[in-house]
Length: 87
Image 1 (cartoon, one colour):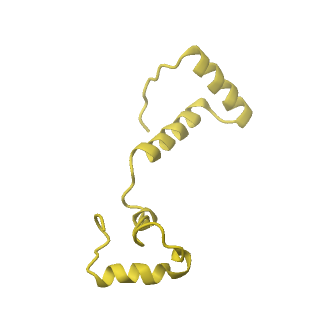
Image 2 (cartoon, rainbow, N blue to C red):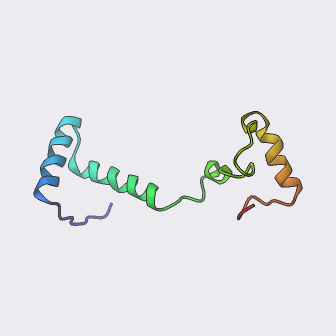
């Protein structure tokens, strides 16, 4: 682990101390969890195969995607879709 120095407002420090006591953990652990959360939100992880499926079944508006998803995805493969880029 890398050691860094972070400046918090007095209010942030008090709330973090209180939360750490309630959760029976350390402020450092809470800060690491917060950093992980922000990184997941702000830095997309393109290696997640589930995220790559989003939007790949075609344009919105089809009412039977939950039933025919395999068929729609198979059509994209037949048409030369490689799974990368836009449709």
